[in-house]
Length: 277
Image 1 (cartoon, one colour):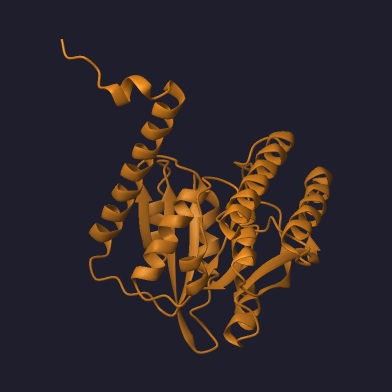
Image 2: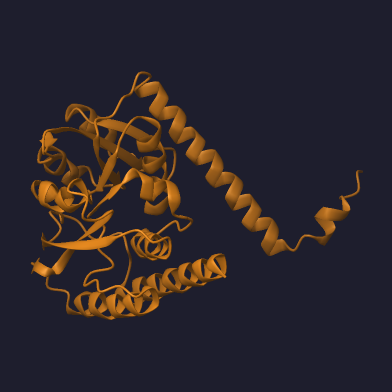
C-alpha cells in the first residue's frame, strides 16, 4: 500500500477541501466554456453585451430577453444568458429569443456565472457590458439611460439605483439593508453611492479586465469595491426596481443574506487594502 506524500500529510483537511472545491469550480467553468463553443462556434458579440445570469428562472426570463433593445445609441446589442445549472429549460428560452447561451453543468453561484460571462464578453468583441437580473426586477428598457454616461465618456461604471428611482417591492428589511450597506461601502471606498447592492449595471470591458473578482455570490459589492480601489469612475442612474415577476428570491433569508453580504464587503475591502499597501 502506497504511503501518502509528505505534502498530503502536512496539508490540513480544511485546506484539502478548499483545493477540491477550487478544482471542481475550474472544471465546471471549463465545461461552461465548452458548452458555449459547441453552441456558438463562430460567436461575435456586438459592441454592447447584455449579460443575464439565470438559475431556475424559466418562468421569468422570457419577457426580460424580449425587452432587451436591439441597439443603443446606434451600437448593436447582443445578449448572453449564462445558465447557472438547473434543468428548467432556460437554454431553450434563450435560443428562442435569439440570445447566446452558455450553460454550467451545476449551480455554482451568480458570481461564477457572471465571471464566465465577463470572460466570454472580452473574448468575443464586446466593448460594454450591461448585467440584468433574470427575475424581472430590472427593466431592460432602461439600458440606454443606464449606459449613457459610459458611452458619453463621463463614467466607466454605472450602477442603477432604486433609491434615486422607484422601489416597488415591500420588504422593509431589505430596503433598510440597501441604505445600511451603501453607507458602509461608501465609507470604505470614499464614494457617494445610494444603492451598492443593485445588480443592474453598465461598464466598460476594461473595468472587468482590471478588477479582481473571486466571490461566488453577492458580486455587486465586490465589483464596486474593487473598481473604486482601482480608480475607475463610478456613477449612478435612477431605476424602477420591480417586484419579482414570479417565484421567490434565491438569496435566502434576510438575516443570512445580510451576513453573507457583509462578509463579502469585509473580505473584498481587506484584499484591496492589502493589494494597495
